[in-house]
Amino acid sequence: MTAKRSYLALDLGAESGRAILAHLADHRLELSELHRFPNIPVRLASGLYWDTLRLFHEMCEGLRLAAKSVDQLDGIAVDTWGVDFGLLSEEGVLLDNPRHYRDSRTHGAIEQVFEKVPREEVFRNTGIQFMEINSLYQLFAAQRDMPKTLAQAAHLLFMPDLFNFFFTGALSAERTIASTSQFYDPVKKQFATDMLRKLGLQGGYLAPLVDPGTDLGPVLPYIMEGCDLKQETLVFATGSHDTASAVAAVPARAGENWCYISSGTWSLMGVELAAPVINDASLAANFTNEVGVQNRIRFLKNIPGLWVLQECKRAWEREGQEFSYAELTAAATQAKPMETVLDLDEFGSPGNHPQRIRDYCQKTGQQVPPDVASMTRVILHSLAVRYKQVLESLETLTGRKLEIIHIIGGGSRNALLNQLTADVTGRIVIAGPAEATAAGNALTQAMGTGHIASLEELRAIIRNSFEVEEFRPTASLGAAR
Image (cartoon, rainbow, N blue to C red):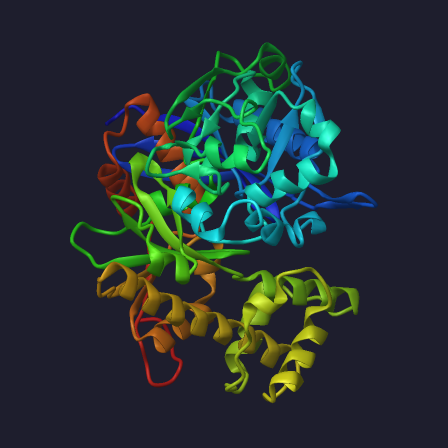
């Protein structure tokens, strides 16, 4: 590999989006951020929505900046969070702005679904953990609350597929994002349409499934003109679920006994397997089987990662106290350790989290963190304790002894959380790359163009391109070593 290839990774997270330009040459990947923009949901009387058209506008701005930077892009790809979707008419017009997964319409929907299809049957058909944010419950709620709108839907597109449609006009369901829905069967590798029919949901609006690396075609002429593209530019399906792209970029070596934590608003902790684990034990543990790049299975657990700290930060800002995450972490590092442990699942909805934490500690008879630094440390310590619980479940369910925890994504920059994780779990933590999602997005495009042959080669490029930091268990918190 000598010629330099250039790919644009459009990476949308729950808090922000980025346009990352990736240059690949001589088995090294270089990333540069061209454009960053906030992802702020909009609340209306009818619900909580993503500002979808604004997000697309910002992605086009990123593409325009990429066109100024290079003469030719070898590919463009979009990755986003999971589960959410848009509904289109036959003419390709949005029928309802895509809802945010924290929208309240799914409250109680799980129990209503189980009245028609038992919990065990849903899991047997999908292998997905039960969370009320899942697409299955969103779709069920749409049928319940908006039957006329749903009846007009000719196409259901998950968020990255929707943006791909805006770019190319192609209707597709990329497999990694489809697998987050809880109506995709990872054994049969198709949508679980029989289960949907039992719920009164017809699957005619589901798009054809495609794999990561699929060429979806060139950008539409209006995009070429509006973004000043000099040549025809192809759009690829990548690991369109951001975690799929991130896990593809884990710098693990063959023969290691490892698990991963994709750390951000959510922490997704799991292992990579050749086949799904769908049995009574994984059902009881509420684990999930999502699809990864090159048909790998991401056997994992969703954990409310840095969301609780993000909500606290927003609450403090409303009170006039503004802190960067680096400042919060630095203060927490100096704070006295506390034994208080939060059940993070109790803090899933937006709100005044500092007050909720104080109320929770009083209700559970635990010490209340007295200030911002202590509260930040309690949140991070609670997250490390949750990692240990999930690690133990992973080892039981897979029969593996997991010796290394790879932490990737933006949360891998949090040295205190990394060290707490090593200390609490007793495992070696390898942190980085922080830009795993963008790197995995770009290199999966390179697999689609034929410039990378395998997932193993992709990971070798990651190891050759990014420095990582190792944290070992210590009796007391110390520096990374």
